Length: 503
Image 1 (tube, rainbow, N blue to C red):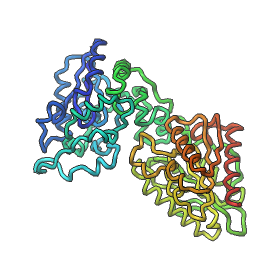
Image 2: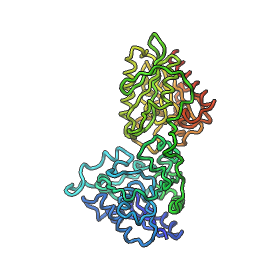
Image 3: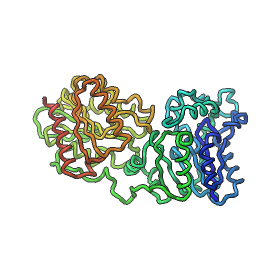
Image 4: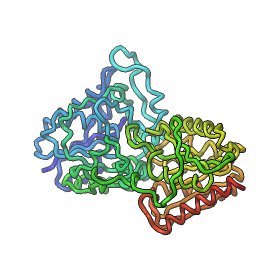
């Protein structure tokens, strides 16, 4: 028999698994929904010293009392921290760990690091632990703020009311105490259940793994599987039947394996789709200038890469074939092509990445080889949100904004951290600034939605948007899809951008 140990999100308790547990038991499984110290009906046991270690010990004690030979532990959101901590103490008892819409915390990470909303982090009391006085608990959110902990998509009104009614304050120490892992559980089989209305799907994960982040390479291990649920962050409330089925299949080792392997050449390092003449390339700090043959100052196209890109990835984006290719291509056509590295390493880095781009633009405009009054900014993928400030208040020297397979509104997986960078809102004040948007037909669904939101807003305000469609193009097509259609799209988009610079 398989025994499931189910550990839920912050502020909740074992009660939240009621429907899932019933369906698992109907299949013959043993089920243990966990109510951690200070949560649910055990809220009276919390105190200033209640911390992550307290919750880890809760789970360890339960493991020790389970007789079943196969123990599958599922951690939902915050719950993955005590699950991983307990598995590290009792790895010989665990058959599989399920990350249910949960992150990948590492040794030393506090749970607070993975809380999606900065506003939640900012409201934490300044102290926790013994001697902290009465200010050691985080109150649960009111009914209209639960989305700060994750999308409520699919949650019925009565279930949301129950969530609010039974929620308990969360001891601060459970969120701030670092998770300590010895590595004893690092070889255990793992399943990730991705709730796609709240975060990335499997295709997006594959894209991130393909960038070469060493922290994500473990996801390519054949012992790691994935499932998707088309719902928000609370599948035990929105789709309990589907969740129970996924947990049973995960226990059997089913699920999709990532197609990316370490031995493959990452897609972003494959050759550019056009064979372009080599032009002089000059490096200044974090900026590269691809230079044309010109006696007079030339118009400039600044190419802004996407992200987040892990800080340790090498080569950095300005040396990726696609960006070098674009820079060299426009230089061959008489404009200065600018590529740069910015510090979008994490979802919280959009502010400093925007500063990096602004500084790069000023550096380039001050170069005597550049006509500072004729500049285009061209954004790619996760760099799309960085276009918002320029669209909202275009300076007179900005002659065009271009975007290729961009994110143009906050993704559910990125949440409020990115909410200040919303091109789909900023376009309403862009006036007649020319915008060249390259849209791929085989886009990741969560990104395609943001493009349509942008285009709807653009139509409402009569913005000057040209759409270059690539029906059979993928996200990152310049190094993936070497076809006549994709080559034509790149040439078309470049011609349009340069046309606006020269008009």
